[in-house]
Length: 253
Image (cartoon, rainbow, N blue to C red):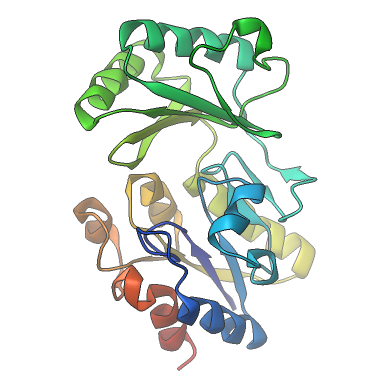
């Protein structure tokens, strides 16, 4: 069976200061040259990932998981595979409820054009005709906890909720998510490349939890939060020291 590494970006492939770890880049090239598969699973979308990982499209040899699992895509972003989106009109209404109740928040959503901020923008100037990938709420952790409790009490069956950092809380379609995309990615590889894969998924934060649960082998850097460490089969070195390079060296032995 082929080996597949699916790597989170922030705090995993790059460090928390957004520094690219070049050892990871070189290791991925060796890993793919040996006949294996590599891709990213990220909350970012195709255009913005290149700002963090220049030339990332040359590292992926299978589709990536973008917008925290709203879809699979190649770096050009032209075709979205297995999309699960939000309805723009109904979600703008929820956004306005939050902005009115918690006036300190900043909220943004992502669609195929990228990121749109909602505060002080008239409803008529916000694109609700096309689907949204996800909604991100930014505020202090205690405010995000209140907002999460509100949304879970009102909309729990409709959305998937997660934190991607201390100050970022997100929701998306209940069928989306990095974890939901792992079996779909393996299915795509089987159908298009003819190989079964062992999926080694690597992540560090709450938005990676379901991905690691869906992995054949769950991996995390040593800087991961405790809930991620508890479910990981392999704990790697700190992201600053090249945790993906660490995993590659173990798999290529």
